[in-house]
Length: 374
Ligand SMILES: Nc1ncnc2c1ncn2[C@@H]1O[C@H](COP(=O)(O)OP(=O)(O)O)[C@@H](O)[C@H]1O
Ligand SMILES: N[C@@H](CCC(=O)OP(=O)(O)O)C(=O)O
Image 1 (cartoon, rainbow, N blue to C red):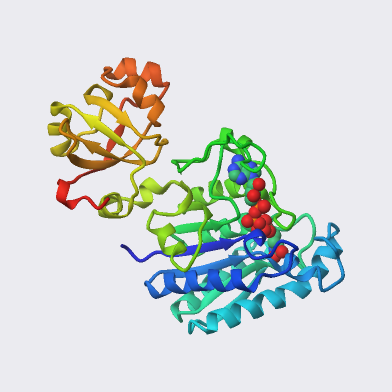
Image 2: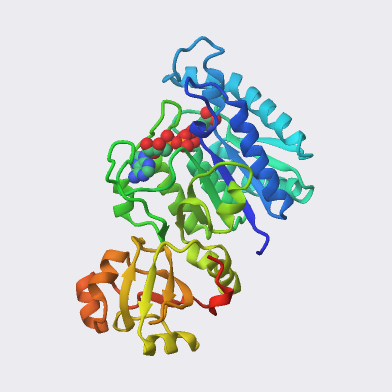
């Protein structure tokens, strides 16, 4: 896989324990995952929250302070603790850390913006890990970044990152807050952010997080406009970030289809994707898919199995049940079931979609059975 420049954003909820306060085991787990990503050849910039959450208890606050002065004071204590924990954790992996505290003005003025960018380039060139946070203790109310989700999107644009991974305490964007609505459904793949998605995302889920899912979706939109692809979700263990950049993360990918362009896309479909179901096609469709440049249309489908969602990957089988390939679907399983065997116009009327293709040829790989991985 291509070596990528990745910005990783870690929220307060993923760094603290249940009573607030920094969780060293969590810091160490993130450090192991970032170290593995760097050792695999990827360049990483870390945007880390957690200064206020790490500092408020030592100042005698029972909960995260609400006043500006309280947050600034807690951040002045917590930022040092946060960096100390990161520096210790990364030293054990032989990685040098660098602290960068930004205020909004640093990115608003062109000269400072370029200086910051050059400095980050130098750190990356030297193999160090820049760790960025807002300079909370001196940031002036009204001209802050608002939250670190937006800061991470701007940093990703500044360093021309390929990918922004936003790690949080929930495994992706749902069509409602899953902590309140047990029937909320998760999006695995979103081509781009539209206003309807913003309406489905609400505020913070923990007592230490600030912006909630809404600020992540807004950040994803900004990152997208800067040409950066985004993942929002979670993960465990040292492999989690490698899994995320290779398309196996537990969360929502935004704009990932173009990230996985050309050969990378095909390789990911073949090797790394985990099929969420299968579609069986008739002989005509099987022959067409085996040739070049053909998309899968509903008219060639004979049955559907599994409860896959839009944007997930499915196995495509011939009438004998043999695997012929794998592709990313434009419609969820229940919609595909309704348009089986239908001509394009009728299928679009039923699905309400803008394309009759169930799998576009750019998101399809033809596999011989013995090449199949799962
Ligand atoms: N549509 C949604 N999908 C997923 N999570 C949501 C949604 N709307 C609101 N949330 C909430 O957003 C929270 C994550 O944001 P936040 O608490 O600010 O985390 P962090 O500290 O990682 O930035 C989740 O725990 C969840 O309660
Ligand atoms: N800069 C602040 C974090 C602000 C913030 O956006 O927090 P979060 O929603 O947990 O990412 C801090 O370090 O405490």
